[in-house]
Length: 349
Image (cartoon, rainbow, N blue to C red; front, side, top):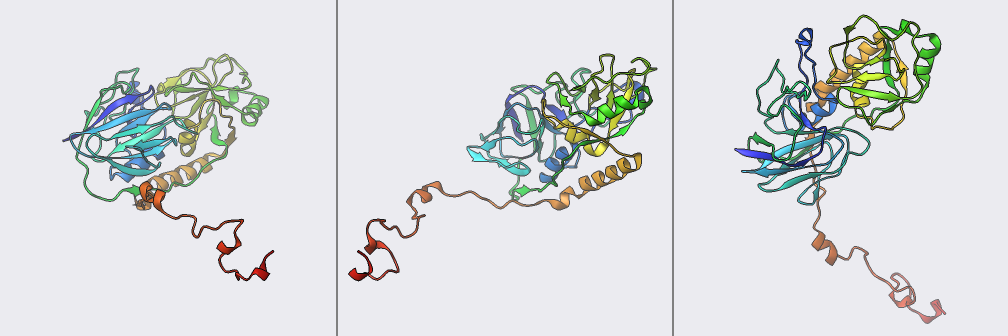
């Protein structure tokens, strides 16, 4: 049996899958990957189920070592420097670590979370059919907490299949929301301010909620309502007027008015937005949100069919040093070395 050992890892890294469902009536949060598209992409590259458990890696770097045999992994999500034994590893590709080799990951660039899927999946004891970690509740497996140095994952040895790559469609623009369900607790002026302002995510945010920094959103009738259910992407406005987007480790109910809800198709994009990066919201209809959700689900299901064999771009650096990469060398001051010219003295001074 091969193992993948966590040699070094930063905070905000844990095991996550598609989430824990069917238990919110008991107050049990769904958790799961912050960016399910990237989770599914990584799993597609190593032949796992789309939303199988993988390692969600926060903005900081990490190092993993293969022991007891080779291990195949795939990396997707927030771009970051990655290499195995000084060989560069591209995002959205698979790579095989030989016995003793290390996968070294740098800081995330232009995103917040990357996903490392392991061929054969992660073994653990599911709770409500999920291995997803919720550190506050002490839930998750095989480690019900953020990962730390010395953690070990037992995995099946890698085979000799070729490495794979995956092209993901580009997405951008405002984060789309459906207004409500308590947008009537805010004036038309405040709703226009919410949609017309630049927002940034506070550095104090976490998997439970993203605190937004921008102009205050004032309530019409106070900030307390009868507690009701929440969903991923609910945007609550507490008494200080600073909105909070509820994320994967949210509570299942809340007592602040919710001015809007991030649509499913854009939830992962919001989750990947780095702290301090400005963005805006755009209101869409319920019908448009549902249509985008269907397109998003179709994209997830299409990922295995988009996988192609990785063409190696490696080269022999030693051979490069001895090669004549400049072609025929000439001297700018010696016309006799210029090819294609007559060497008659009348042709030059």
